[in-house]
Length: 275
Image (tube, one colour):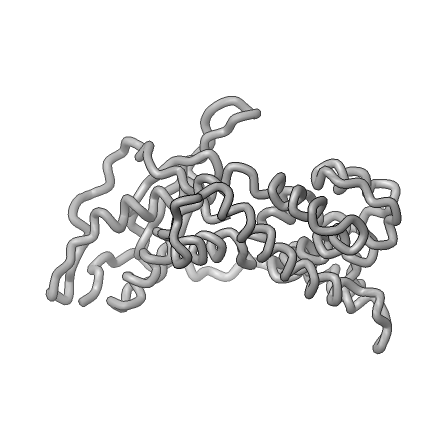
């Protein structure tokens, strides 16, 4: 069975290579207060924070002043704190549900988004080669750096300050997260039928600057199959995926299709978020 939505091939015309712009140097200690304010934690010794922001490419072989050991610790602290916080927020949830909620909150994509919201990419210390290749924006590096920063908070301040930082960073997502993950379910359903992976696109942002509402659409083979809104971009994508799942037409036909064209109105329900 395949979802019979065929999109037009994209324009294959070649484009001229643009000259590479030099990557900006990372910000220094004098701006670390920006990170501390976002975390809600001030380091007594900023050497911990500097180490958490330093990639292994900066130093020579055998030098142990990069973030990897702190990242190892922060990974465990994040898992423990999220488990602790989810137990408090969802007293009736079962173990399996809690595990799924934690997985939705603790993954590379979610952690990288938090790191970007903190502006950590401006501070990551990389070799010139890594910096020039865009390493400061790479999700895997940003996720590791965030865990390292939280590991640094734990090493200096202990568990409670680290847990408080994590609670602050995750905010309402601790409440809105659900055991279900519509985005993953939609991708798996499409993969099982041989269809292309879904593509999410931010359509517009509504509301005041201090309380934006994101509206996203999900496309399959170039056709919009779901639309949703949410208080974060990811929440709107989840809602769009939920709408697409609700409209799938199960069939043994090789050309199984989505039931109807997506209505132009925006779905207003299901503002759960992965992060």
